[in-house]
Image (tube, rainbow, N blue to C red; front, top):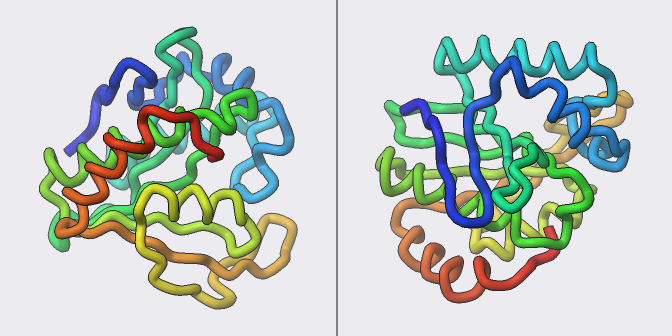
Length: 197
């Protein structure tokens, strides 16, 4: 199931590699990216560890961390991950997505999600794709809802943030039966126009 390259005319997604360290450092240097994230990629040491962990997860088929590359510039502008993979139960999660702020309020994230969801439902034949976010990350919640995902509820006291505070997690999903309608929504409305991410 390992995804190699997913792309359209806006964005390319490909597996992270050791040679991506410099590009990640450049894309990840704005501290505002990391406010709601479990990682903080502001040092070379942190990025090296991030890449090393990702490559190890790829090799064991635990998770697939993908570089987000802007097709217009050819530059790395972020990352997203397929994880919590259960082929037995035909489900996985999309998450750990970060994008450099210059591409916030554009259609980059929308195109990423479209490529990933198409891959999940049409190539892998999954029954469920879930997406979750911090209860305080309102921007992320709005973006997920615009995609057509269904809010399933809130997992209370679900995680401890890197600053030690407690996070509730807002859980969303798209299931196989909903995908044709969600896909049509993407193609008619979302891919053509920039969206707030």
